[in-house]
Length: 477
Image 1 (tube, rainbow, N blue to C red):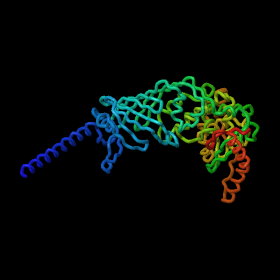
Image 2 (image 1 turned 180 degrees about the vertical axis):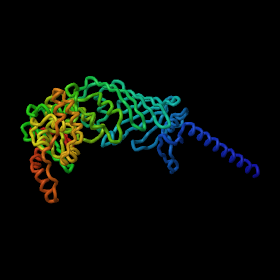
Image 3 (image 1 turned 45 degrees about the vertical axis):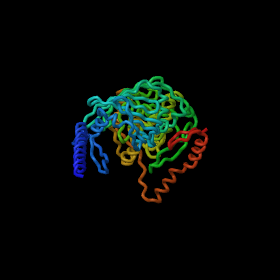
Image 4 (image 1 turned 60 degrees about the vertical axis):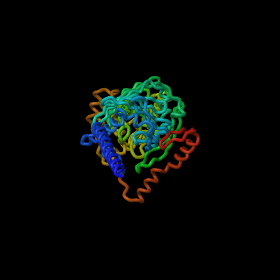
């Protein structure tokens, strides 16, 4: 019995020593990889360990996961995440994480999740550099990452890839990818810094062409669209050739088209629907607010008005691009500009140039002055705010308008300078509604023609083989 107690004691001491040595080794590994380096300005996150929150360094966790020998320890492990079940396997010194199927969701990506049959990422570290690849469906991107305590700097490259293949991989958030004919090749490379999500991209697209979306129906005739009202709601209306709110391009006058292109798309006559120099920085850096409107050409803005709606996501921009490319081929520049000027939002219930010119200046579009045209173009980024803070207050802000005016190079410089010195005066703004009953009456008056428009919209939608979101276009024969 004495010998047994002595043996148990020795084993106990050995177990304690083993535990201390193992935990000590783990502590050394954890400390040496900077997992607990959480002092500012470190990039940190919170993990649950044994039911308790622990703050850890993100780059340190990447170092730990890619440390020599980690691939052996992690091989065969699996765990569940919001994206799907992740399985780990070893490939040489690299560790590969696989998600199949995979569900990715981010507000800057799309309003609905991106569903992919398989996503894999490999990682192998040498010093402070991690290299590997990412595959999503049939796409493959190669990357390298420099790890620092407060950031991770990524460099990545997408080799020459079929554009249609890339779009089809995104079909759950870009539904047009399944039905459209998409041709062309793209290559891209860039850098991205985390957690700031800042970066840059070089994008090369060749032979891009799109068909099968039906935009040729906008060559003539009527179509249905949505127009934003004063209360923020959307009123569906009928627009198009010979409709009362329509103004043909040859009756638009010279100033308003020139001002709009000066403000929104000075390369309109040079690009094929999108501007690579604008799209690349948009895709390189996506923050929580999503893509910025400023990256859109006039053609893309028209696509947003008539087809895609205005959600601030990368998916919307990718959908917008498809429609823009096709419209450039099926409609041509003149028709695109004519459609844009007759559908663009210029304030509450003011969709199109006729309504805008009449409301703000009591004129027809061809009657407005160069400065008035420049002001109308200058508010396109925030027309409802301008209506409320400038028009209703009878206080026009002309600094940006004068900048737009000086970009209207179809006018002689001396004429631009002359108009820039002139004052800008609005027509009388409507008086505020003073009672609820009066407000309801005014709203009824504003919506007087809504039933006719609604009936036409339903006819158009029934004739279309694909439903449109709010704001989408449909042909009314």
